[in-house]
Image (cartoon, rainbow, N blue to C red; front, side, top):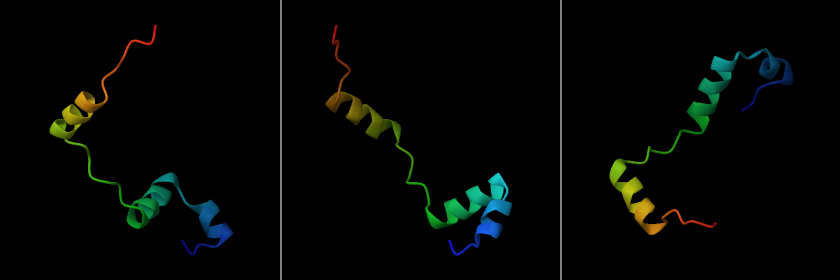
Length: 48
């Protein structure tokens, strides 16, 4: 990120999160339809 160690350790948690979100944006959230499809493809099984 180009920060000096001193500047890095001086960051607050909200500042650090803002830098990370700007550099590494979160992937889009999983919609209900996609979740349902994944659940059908990979159902829970009883391993007992």
